[in-house]
Length: 276
Length: 276
Image (cartoon, rainbow over all chains, first blue to last red; front, side):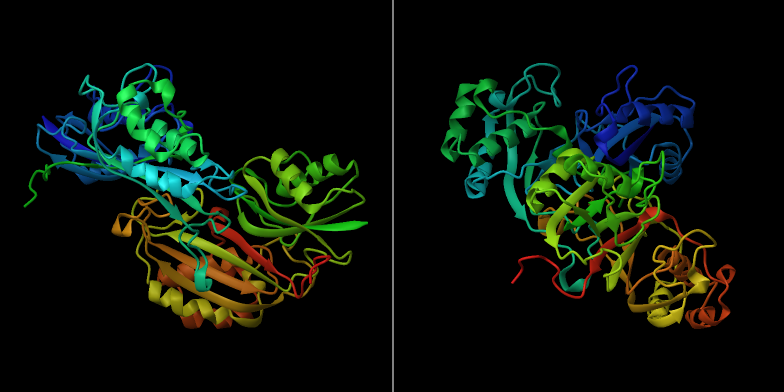
């Protein structure tokens, strides 16, 4: 068997999430169906993270095993020819047989966008949470790093359902980086157009979190809690006790999925066959 | 009668262009219908440029006249509450009675985006022409400024139909700036996330043109001609003779609408009532 690694971007707006579900349009379903067509085999494409319905990806990683003789470039072109334009295979490579996109991942980075302009641009409404109301952004920025480190994230988990990363039954997770950044619109300075098409976009808050793995809804619950800090319902110092409480009803709400992006997935070493 | 000026952004993907047409979803139709509802009057919203089906706007300008007692902020909020999320009123102000978005415009700026990456991102395919093939970009950049100045643009006009700006029957138009810019993806440097959500985006060519007014399809015909320069079918020095030929079959093709943006519209003086 050969093993192929795919780096995949998708606009999650029109999908019922990553995970294959009968009768639903899902990313894993679309990729697995096409992999089956291309190889004539029954193929399951395994992803690093099971993104929920509406969540986007800039660099999801997946792998599948096959006896096919196609090379990685042929797979990439064929996938992109058959997939909808809302899913793109950015890279394909052959990897060692033991590579598994999910089990071998050592870190994942997620990003959550909060549009702060009074009006949300027609180009951003599918891709950022619009929150035009008053926020203590300094308090939010101070609170964000307080989830770094190893903690019991039970207070930030989904109420039910499978976890996004159920490798471990334990709700303890390790977060390397948790940061809230304010971004001013970059476009149009000096009359030079930005690659970002949207000069009408206002400022944004971008929450970036990098960790080994995450509980289901964890990033969105952290964001919801940071918004509660911004609204003055929590202080930054209320965050650490939430780890002790292990009670999801005590943290903030789960914010909407359309602001969330799986940015990248990291692996411990080059898995590519034939890499130097 | 009072006169209100609107600055409007829209994602043109799902509209049959600006101009009102029976039985079609158009921007002017949506705005006029809502203006009618808000005022209880029969209102036509006049736009500065009649963008074609699929063309986007970052800063279209429009105006409408009414006896309504609503103030500009009330109009803006009401429009945005009733419009689809793909159309946003970015600003509203009361202007002098003689202001007309189209007749008083002294300059308009359009932009055309050409995605140059091998794979087009799932977030860009609706918003840029994907042209991954080899192009002599230096020749294109040299050719772009050759349309600056006052010329007969008959070779760059639509084959039929009304002109985008039919103020003048003459096909002579004045172009202040015509420039092709290469933009590398800006995102992710130093680990700081870009406001642009799309780190998977490759480099782009952005054509920027500012002129007093434009013939219908003119920007897209100029872009199609620049692409022919890039492909080696024209040299830059083949551009100026096209003005003499006055034959649209001799220039390049009309490129797809979804890469085109009406960026801004300029007026000669502050028309706002009560401005200092």
